[in-house]
Image (cartoon, rainbow, N blue to C red; front, side):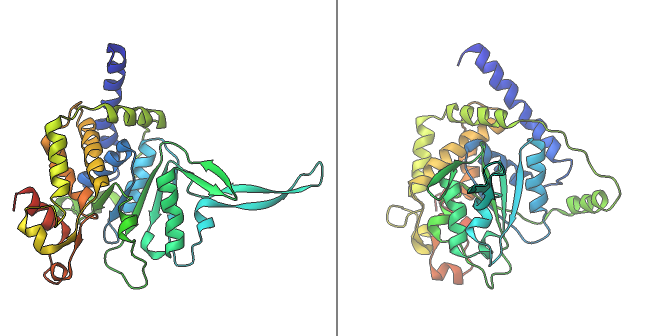
Length: 326
């Protein structure tokens, strides 16, 4: 990297702590989830966010988009939602000069930089597929015409883990399209007390846009250039292969898993480790990056058997045992 280019990238990276500080004006706690959303954005992927109601999932995503000066759209998924409600549809219009009628494509809410797909498991597979196609292709096809989505482009889909009646769980193949599976927990006692004090008065924090869409696109380019040693790439490969019952030496995995993660998980782990290094203002990956991100990257790519579910074994338990060499 040339000196001028390096200085430019360093100036961009130095904005990331300011971004987190700005988000913290509104969102109290949940630092790990916020870090993982930013990592997903830097790595150019999408994430699935799971948490019980009332944990400010929507507010978190909206706050991040405001601090990034990006266009934000929210789609509330319901059983009667149709693909056209997401991607858009054609409208019959009339040319006032000639009187001729023609169809014009009206873009749907998917055409935004950050899209919150709220309760994605509450809509039928046909509508889910329309969203997942846009996630993968970064474009929408309607009536044979392609429409490019804005860049950067991040979809954050949410799931409620409690109410499962009448839902349409995402198939494993579609879950694999999400770069990270982020789990939101309850805040600590001190954080919850601060939430009560700061959100029940008349004051409202004012957010400043810290970064632009161009800044994020340049940081995405930088993320790809972050150094990772051959030894750490081999470690990533070992971790991913250790999730598969037929190629692992882990007795824990053999006992509780039906199948493990595919090669896409390894690609995701390398790329997200690089993004975490950038977020930490480093230009090289360290082992901690890999081991920390193994959980949100692998937890939706491991299939447990019926005995594991009956015994209350969770994917995170398998990942923990695997990383510790059990």
